[in-house]
Amino acid sequence: MRLLQISDTHLRSTPGEAGYPDPAERLDIVLRAVRGHGFVPDAVVLSGDIADDGTLGAVEAAAAAVAPLGPVVAVPGNHDDPGPVRTVFGDPWLDLGEVLLIGADTTIRGETAGTAAPLARVVAAAPDDRQVVVVGHHPVRSRSAHPWFVFADQGLVHAALAERPPLALLSGHTHEPYAAPGPAGVPLLGAPSTFYGIAHDAMTWERADGTTGALLITIDAGEVRHEVLLA
Image 1 (cartoon, rainbow, N blue to C red):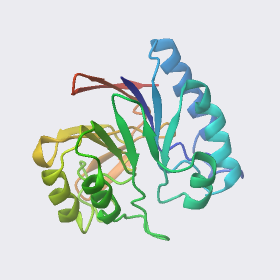
Image 2 (cartoon, helix red, strand yellow; image 1 turned 30 degrees about the vertical axis):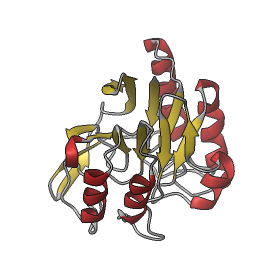
Image 3 (cartoon, rainbow, N blue to C red; image 1 turned 180 degrees about the horizontal axis):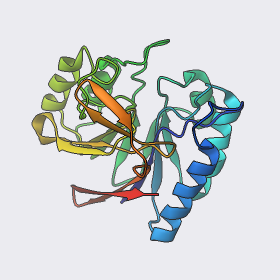
Image 4 (spheres, rainbow, N blue to C red; image 1 turned 180 degrees about the vertical axis):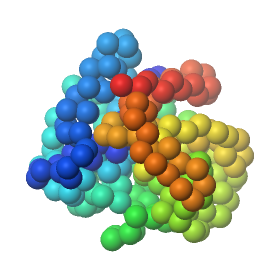
């Protein structure tokens, strides 16, 4: 089972901020790199900040770009309007037979930071008899300690993971690849952004060129492997 995780595309229906690359061109570069790598996914995971301006048109552009690669599970990020994300992609639930993909909306309207409560509810409600991969925009852990990137209520999801550990928990938001075992040994995998990279160090961060790309995830007999593809 192969999953392609694409995150923080930040597509726009209107011109973006000066000094940043064109997000649509950046997404195309990453997707061409995925194809060139020979990675053929069974499904695509979009882990938030799909539309930098929250518009329906930008979400539709992202859908058109990734649709040829396979079925899609998408969750909103803090830059998204959750309405267009759900309109275009539907409920964040995809049964792939071997694996069940379930998404959670961790956003707080008008805030950069997120809440762990929806993530905890999704983890707790996952079927006990299925192999489950859960995705949310905000990470349970990362290299950041800043309140924008850390759940204030993260104890909720820690308890849920300990009670019903999924195969993996996927996130975006930090624009930086990340991998570490979490509560109950659950792999916590953070994808790079396709748009621009960030390097985090506790309370500070800086733009990091050359760190954009995608996360290539393989699940085999309950073992989760990943590769960061930079592009």
